Image (tube, rainbow, N blue to C red; front, side, top):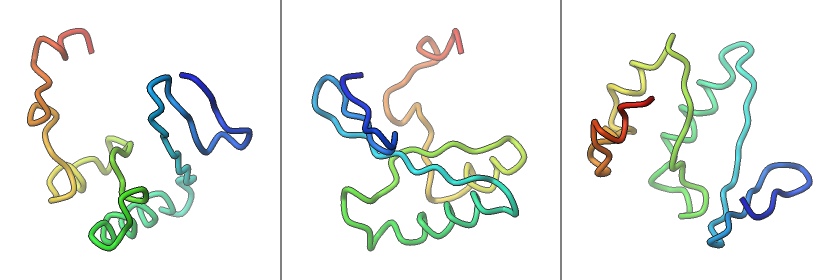
Length: 86
């Protein structure tokens, strides 16, 4: 990591890649509601505002895993050997 903004919303990696973080508390289903809204707007979102990765709890993982919004990490070229220590 090269640099983190003061408000911690942006991280700039050593190769110049900028990572924008969005943090939503989970109270009253807020996290899922915000994530659902953002995923539904993916097609209209600018390239910088599209979601590349998101975290989910086991309680509602299947809702997203079994959707068109996710892909198997093996489709990215990650192998069982890569995952063996996880």
